[in-house]
Image (cartoon, rainbow, N blue to C red; front, side, top):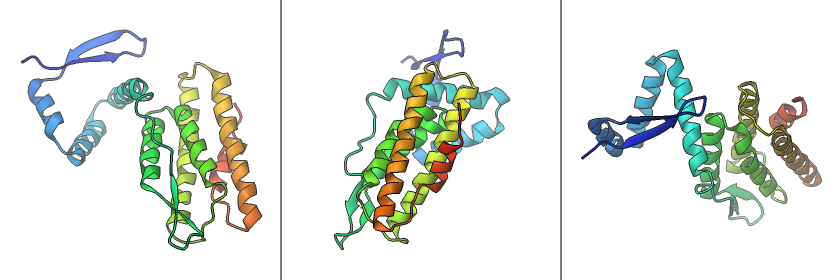
Amino acid sequence: MPAPQIVAHSPDGIKAFGHVNLMVDTLIANATIEDLRAITRNLLASGSPGLASAFTDAARIRLRQTIAKRIANTNGLFEPELDGIHAAPSSSLDNTLARIRSLYGAGMGFASLGLLVTIVKATIGLRWGRDGSMAAMLAVIDTDISQAIQSCKEELEGGRVNDLTAARDAVNKLWVSVQESLADVKSWGGEFPFERAASSIEFWKF
């Protein structure tokens, strides 16, 4: 049985063909997610300087191939708590955040912004206390937005943005959604959850 063929792309777009050793492929197919994460981290930490770059190049190729098929479900990101007044994060939100982090972690920050806009907009009209799971999750999302913006900056600096107009439009939509959230939270006297995100966007010019 021949080993699976792997098709990769070099930075200049030329296809490169290779094969995964059959035993290695058996390991990949059967190892736990935790083991694969540990192996990957150890490899990247101990490998050559170009290995991490090659890894993220391969990750971006894969994510571009699957982005249309695996866009996270953005329905029901939040659900009502038992009191019927406050909101709480749902399992769908976890799945969406995992997709967002995969994108910006691979250097596809701009591709992650649309999903972040969906999350921010989904908070409008909801209520939550200063403590609890909702407030804690929104603080995490605030950090995710800042991380995605940093990924966007690195994407620009790396010359990987082909459409600057679309990139600016994505950032503007995120800015508008954050401002809408601010106005909504002020209307019911809540604590605005996206302060870091607002600052990251406001002072970023490109």
